[in-house]
Length: 261
Length: 259
Image (cartoon, rainbow over all chains, first blue to last red; front, side, top):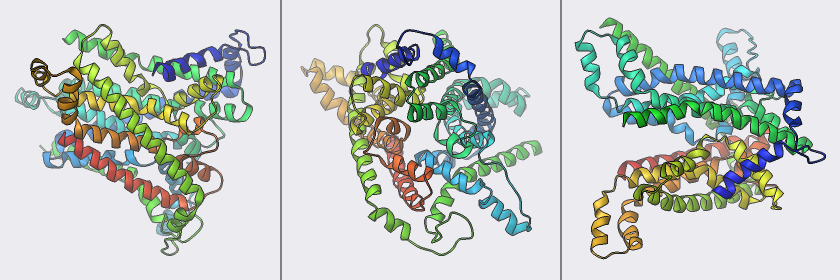
């Protein structure tokens, strides 16, 4: 593990500080990165996209996990969960590609609308950031629902009864009991989704298109196109920094657990 | 009470919407894999199995498939075995820095695959290793190890400690108690972990993309066909892969429940 995981990361870190021609230690790669519009833009585009992804994922996943945990009958609970997460086992790439078929201007949606209403519509949805957000959100919803469910299922049902006995309603139930008690699952799910969204390559390429690249696309084209390893390493390290920041909520979680003990 | 059922109805609709959104692309893929038209647009022409025959006869798909199988089977064997020993020491011993080691083993989970791929590529090529399937196997092992360790240590922490202590006091060696007590009780978890890591490694694309040059795996082949002009055989292969991994996935879940 140390050999193949820690060393490579440090090697990349070192690469990012080396000048690509002379090989001397420099900070220029980082300055150059933020000086060029295309890099700068893609960096913030990636962040913006990922924030939207986790926002929508959480909004959708919370009611879903609540539904599976408290509304669905016990007999069907596992089945409902399984239905929701089974597509984890399909190729991510092929699923993204199928969306391309459905959403493109000659795709299924426009065909269907045309058949039913007779109108020719233009979706203008594919190859935009919205399409990437859409594709990644569907993935995030699955992941967060699964982790939230794991937290929610451990909630003591007597707490809910106590809430309604003491005159509380659905709102106080969710606010005072379910939300605080499922927070660990929510945090872990959100952080993992964010990390996947920040680093994903396939969905932004197939659904987002190449005109407004995210960091992962830019990294790949830099390596395969210009062989400028140092610039690519700089991007990789920036991504690592973003991820380390994203992991801070996880640390607070660990602390919390220790205090409870 | 009326409010309550309104909320429930809303939740039912939400669940149905999300599930149909998740399954729509898969359904489209399966339907189109039987469509005789070369272009991926409606209307549906006629039923055909040409694309399936094409997959079976195309040497590139076969090569990708066999490469993928070799790599992911070795990855999952290696990862499951190593994870078994890691999990054993994490669960059964108490030493300084254990919690640190615990976190360390899980860090690859929070590192995007593209970073694992890129940094390994940089590091190994600076050490003079050429990209190859062997490197892919290393990269993918790193990515599946945390999952394997999590699964196995979960199971091992449920085994009563005094079983092993009884064996020791009856004169069994540490190694023997491990093989005769821990290993049999983890049997199902081991198989499940093997299957799980296999499906993850089999589907993995981006690490493989960075770490191999000429011998391609199936996901890479799929990717290149997607980007350079579409081949309807993709739908066929996607359907096959989906059904196999779904079956394997369900088997592994059932095994987990069985323990």
